[in-house]
Length: 194
Image 1 (cartoon, rainbow, N blue to C red):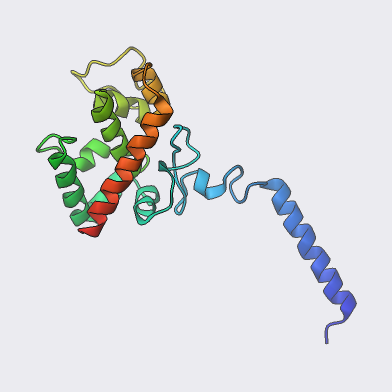
Image 2 (image 1 turned 45 degrees about the vertical axis):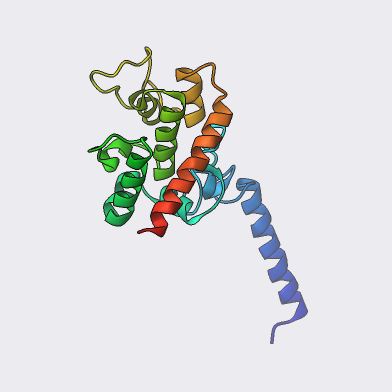
């Protein structure tokens, strides 16, 4: 039989362990914001403001966000050909993606699917080159033939920072939020049909 003193000792040890863990990670596992802030398997990857603290769809958690943050867009689309087909068709019918464009190729290098689709919307909404946005957001090279400002692709940037750089007169935070909402709707619609 367990004595009261043993229960008290065990409770004290558990409280101490919890306090130590909280002191080391004040906002949960992974530090400030935990796995969700880092774009972990169940959390977002980029915020509407454009930093990397919440996903490419604002702070909403939906089935679209779980698909979008779990894997690279190339993996998500490659593993779900119906989603790829429906999303590509939807984006092409809205005039956001040129006919014959492979969405997996367009989204390669992005952190998640939501981030890529939001960039496609920003490109269309603000008439910014998608190639320039992609280079800034992925830290990749500007494709040959693309005309982008000097320094494009030199560093990985959030969607908001990329908008600020490529369209300084635009309200980056508002535009990023709008595009993320549009991306979320596109992904949810494609998921329903796949």
